Length: 115
Length: 109
Image (cartoon, rainbow over all chains, first blue to last red; front, top):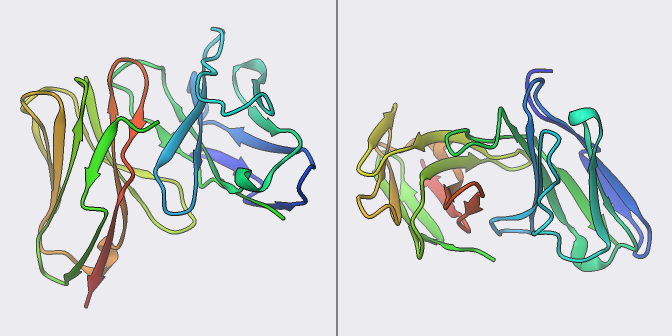
């Protein structure tokens, strides 16, 4: 497709389970970002990938969170041993490169609910 | 945590009224962006600003990059019901992106 694609769009799981969220960036975009948005709040930066460089993980809230980007394209965000405070919308964005003048294009997010 | 202070948090206006919202930062930004988010969707870019003092319009929307590089505003003229949503400012202090907490706009017909 033409835009950033995220799946699943909704995920409900029990506390303590692991979850994987997927992001397909726009073709050719080398920069990829993950954000978390709690209900009624702004976007909280989690992690970004730029080409083959080491990812910037400075926003990950705990070691239960990790992300991979395979082949410079698709990315998965993994949350282990989920807790109720992990409930949020997880947004992925991509841009052509991580330069200062490149706006990000967002997917529609994955709404994660931890019971 | 957030480095941007966005205000107001919410606005309830009558259709046809003009709207103004702004963001301030404690640090200098190289880029200011304004996004709109509707329920169940990701943020969509409205306007991007790249130079201090820059004033850019997109239809009924106008945004400015403050001279001090620490603030930006977004104006919406003659609001219509489809303007409803949450508006986010975002800025790049260097190569990172920071978002404001959003302004929730409600337009009454």
